[in-house]
Amino acid sequence: MKIKVIILSILISGFYFQPISAKEIATDTGIEFYGDTIKFTFDKCAVVEFNDSLSTSSIENFHTKISAANYDSLVRDMVAYKNKRNPDDWVFYQLIRKVAQHISPKEENYRRYTLYKWYLLNKCGYNASLNIAGDKLLLYAQCDETIYDIPFYKRDNKQYVCLNYHDYGHISMSTTKFIEIPAQAAEAVHSFSYQLTQLPAFKPEDYKEKSLEFGYNDMTYSFRIKVNAEVKKIFTNYPVADYQLYFNAPLSSGTYNSLIPQLRKNVKGMSTKNGVDYLMRFTRYALQYEPDEQNFGKEKRLSPEQTLLYEYSDCEDHAALFYYLVKEIYNLPMIVLEYPKHLTIAVKFDKPVGKPIIYNGKTYSVCEPTPQEHDLPLGGISEALSYTAYQIAYAYDPTSKK
Image (cartoon, rainbow, N blue to C red):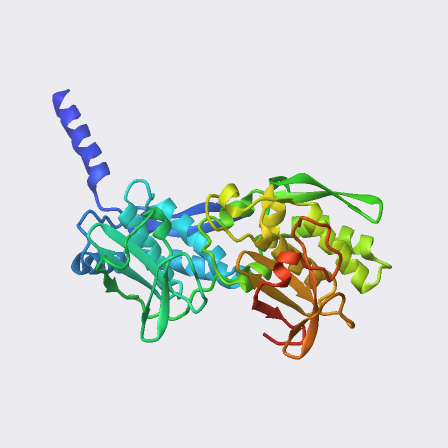
């Protein structure tokens, strides 16, 4: 009996410790991603450990190990998804974060999780680098856009912006000496963009109805639009960037189809000026105003969809939504007027209304989409702003190919 037990123990030990072939440990996994179930193949036993202190040599050693591991199928699957769905870079980065979390959970080993993101960004074609200082590991991506509230540095006339600064709260970038570790993959040649041209195809059940109401010409207009809280997740940690990135961000299909056709129907038969006036007052009065400091505790620019989703929004957000509606329904030239403490929109009509704004030899009429002390008509501007200097923060020309 003892001999049988010993033999059984040996067999069990052999079962647990004998080498496993690559075919046996390669596995398919499904990741839910904004309405899609994306299947990836990766080696579940090939997770590369990283418990060393941060240094150039320790990260190079990690990269050597992960390059030798069985991640080629995973990278091919991710690139294939990117080529098929064509997600914007910011959305694709959310997938990279989710895959890295699946393989190497952030809460278990933050440094390893960040190194996985760096590796996957590189292998999927992005020029991503690392900066290390003591116990700090910052992930950067080469980006050509103007970003305001996150660290950046320049090398070889190229700008690199930080993707994970939010994880640290605050770092004195001017007094901290960082060591840069550039991209380590031949594929890592593309810049990263924060521009959004499409939102994912969300599941219909993820939408909820929201009621909006405002008065126009002695009539009350009521709307029940669809909004999706998943949009908040997409814009989590999205930085403060140029206005054009926010103003030109799209609506998701569910929100678009619940609002835009109704607005088109309501302005049908109106003159262009009256239709724009209707959209101006919809934006001004159907949405509640509150400054960012009170609403979020900091500066936060919202896309048009976010403006519809959140209960409160400020002048920049009202301007972004109004710009989107005018562009979508009338496609008129517009300029964004930036005052020291206010942002508004001016629209080009065949003939200006009120005191015109002249820009590049063309006349524009102010259309105030944010609630004011007095009910301003089309072309009207508050008395305080009438004598305040402004600058053109962004100009939209429908005839431009840009």
